[in-house]
Image (cartoon, rainbow, N blue to C red):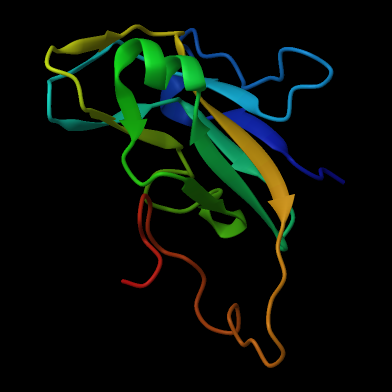
Length: 150
């Protein structure tokens, strides 16, 4: 049985996309890279495709954080501070669970992100629910990016 991991989404199968990995034995996060070249204008937010999806257990979440070097050197920030990838995002009908990184350029010049450049890191963790929680009793997720609560 598969526990947790990463796969390349179908539209990027023939592209040069690498699965996220930890760079050292003590690294907490799995580094995510851009799947394509992207220019982010000053004061703009852009969804950067990774070409990757993540699978995990129902009581787990993948938290996405910006890499500190990306924030400092490129004057970029994660638009939503911390990305939350739910277990049921994987395999959704809209985009297979493709993980996008929403970057905001708070600098004064356009920033170029090149394909293969590491821009964010993901950390898998478990979460707790309250007594009587009935989430998951209804219809399965039916949308892609930002689809809960529609």
